[in-house]
Amino acid sequence: MLDEPQPLNTTALTGAIAGGVAARTWTEVTVRTDESLEWLMLRVATSTTQAHTAHLIAGTDAAAGHGLDRLLLAGHDPTLYSRDSLTYLARRPGPDGLIEIGAAGCGPAAGPLTVQLADLVHTWHRAGRITPPTVTIHPAGTRFPAGGGVISKPGSTITVTWPDEAGA
Image 1 (cartoon, one colour):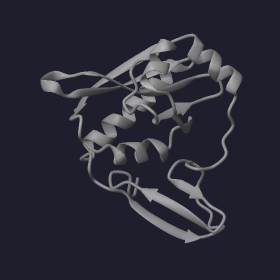
Image 2 (tube, one colour; image 1 turned 180 degrees about the horizontal axis):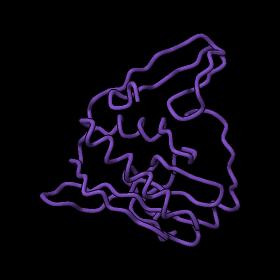
Image 3 (tube, one colour; image 1 turned 90 degrees about the vertical axis):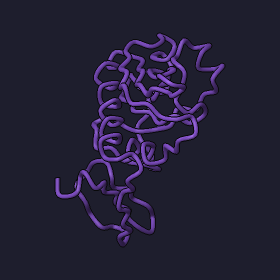
Image 4 (cartoon, helix red, strand yellow; image 1 turned 60 degrees about the vertical axis):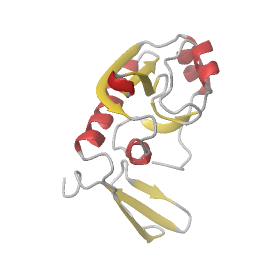
């Protein structure tokens, strides 16, 4: 879910970050420094993983000061988190001046979370990267199966369906 209150154990997540990066998965997916990543951000935010989604807000210096890898988008990186662990999109130099996207995680469940986030990057890449989803607004109270892609608002329910997920 995006834009909805979600359970957040700030003490456990702060402890996870203080412990530094516990797992990394590099995707071999590269982007240009000027490439738009809005569909990747929305895919992560509306994912159907068992983890919750949020944005990790940290400047480059603050992240480095906590032993974190460089964030893909300093200031507002999409993040998957569980009760005591989190993973975020990371970056490192790639070939020919490109940036490789990876997932870096902190906490005891960092391994599975980094794999989930890296899988979302691969799905975005295979789906064509710039292919937009179908966003549909339904009357408030419309019921849909639990999971990502459904955003409940006071006046409406919004569904986000990716072309590669349609009919799945």
